[in-house]
Image 1 (cartoon, rainbow, N blue to C red):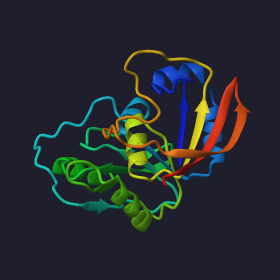
Image 2 (image 1 turned 30 degrees about the horizontal axis):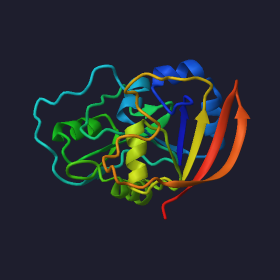
Image 3 (image 1 turned 135 degrees about the vertical axis):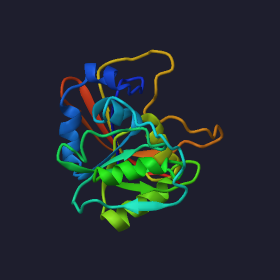
Image 4 (image 1 turned 120 degrees about the vertical axis):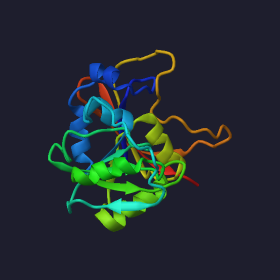
Length: 221
């Protein structure tokens, strides 16, 4: 399930949407009953990761699929960080165990650091993360059955392109961004001939101060 808040022109810059929305994002997320949540590198960098990025002294790539489960839990906070750039102040975010998804091109030194810090990881995909395979591992090894994908736009676009989004939960906040080049709700798909994914409207609700909560089911046919 993809749960996002955007301006009415579909932009999702964190600092911008913080100014036009309030607690309704988290209140509606709670109602979706998704104990595991996933965010991309940019979103994690903005809200949760350490300020200084990880820089490997030895850039030798891990070069293989690898899974490390540090702890059993009924819920996880999942970070998608293809090249292993994020550093973490703790192995949990708000008390929820962290799982990092990286590609096989990540530095071996990075995954060794994660192990040392007690942080679970999934390393899968040669040139980039193999999202379908990563989701299968989350289910089989970590027991994840229901998950909220919380952006950014390129992560959302990757999940959409892979056919992995079953539902879109969109908060349309009362504001306009309008700035050139800002990331959209779903972004980064390179196939210009790709047909749009059709949606079926499930519900519309007025929440917060002028925000619309719109829920759709996806139809990849």
